[in-house]
Image 1 (cartoon, one colour):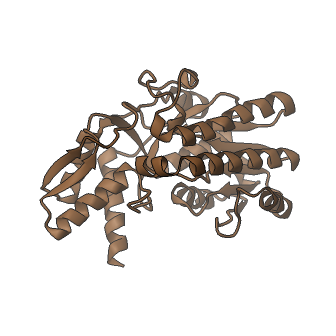
Image 2 (cartoon, helix red, strand yellow):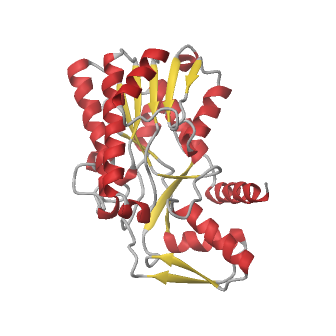
Length: 313
């Protein structure tokens, strides 16, 4: 943390799921000065707001987490918004960072940027070898354009922009809203509500065959800080756990941990999403010493316990 201890650090999306964990870790490590504007106070899709933010705080380092995100359903319902809001925030934040002389910019991409049929495990050099999975392609492509901008600005202006590709995150403080949540919080909520109501089945989208990889949110926060501290290269870097699980097996684990003993009904008319997702995480280990630490079931238990605790308040 020697680098960040003496810096003014702007974190966009600091009030969000990942952002709240990143802010807490930065504070515990003694980060110099943290700036984390709330979304309600600073709409980052508007260039004048970004300029005012940089003028007021003069950050030396920016970590850009802010994003408009959601599961398959939310992506299908909001492709235009997910494309526009994500690309316009990132493009303007990087451009204004260049103009204001920001020393380092850490941009977060998404695993949704990878081609639909990327060989497993996903290696960063395969990022451009095809079109993303259709249901979340607008979001994935918007975030992938930030990698193009990062490399172009490094080439022309010598700007130090790094680009990280995190896998699906989970953990305490995740989004459990039924209209926009990702698969783990959605399944936890379904199982617990079905158990509470005495229902004998839950309905899950798809057929259970796709695989996913998940990274505990505190591991992700640690990885982002390590990269910001130690990595200064142009290549994109995956952030993940390197462990793959099928949706069918995931549902089984969550049902067991939540105590739901009913039937799982698969709605095969709903989309599966990308067939497989699992990252090659060797670059992160090589470039800045990151490997995931959280055991998956322990992380799921922590997430379930947090959600139950919220409902008891």
